[in-house]
Length: 295
Image (cartoon, rainbow, N blue to C red; front, side, top):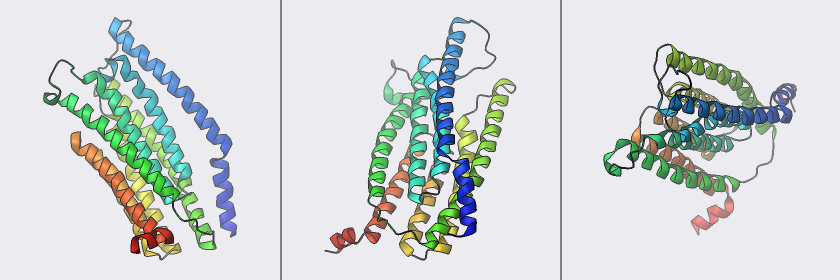
């Protein structure tokens, strides 16, 4: 192993040690519970007028909306795990991206539930239709992620050679750079959201602030890893697979710019495209599957 590999491994192990991961996990649990309680108190404070709340939000109408806050904190933890798992494999990283976008969709359901009108015709109310889109979308995406992870488990095991060691070390560098960038981006996004809420009286969607930036950064990181992979492999199938996974991230990023059915369809198409790419790659790389197809 080269000296710079050992240096990067040492830093990566210290930053993303099991002890630190456990600390982040415990902090996520506590912040989730505290956030849920505070959100619930704000809802009942507004309902019973315990004290004046200087801003209006649809998330302060129904107690069910309080689930939105712990889900948001859990999403931040999932993003942290994505950064941790980035050096493992491109496929693992993409799987984690799919899980994150599915959790964002689930969280949106909790935000949409208080808006539905049970007395109106379901097909005549935009909020009711959106809830149907989101629920069906979650079911389809969950099933596609299951198939994707199942296909991922069938990936052929490859021996570790100097090229793979260098590639993994390069991805660890990307993870180490990505972590502080995402921390800074999250603080800036939260500040902008709070400032708009309390001072400008604008209730903006946190997704449009943070996750747009997050997936834009992720696309750049994926492209960088793709370019690094050209240095360590010349296999056409692997390059096409990695390029396809970058397209998946781009489709997810595009979904934040639209709403309604188009938003859900873009997310589904991203996961479906990744699944198709991975299955084709498996057939190309796995000799047993390849023989079955040719026979």
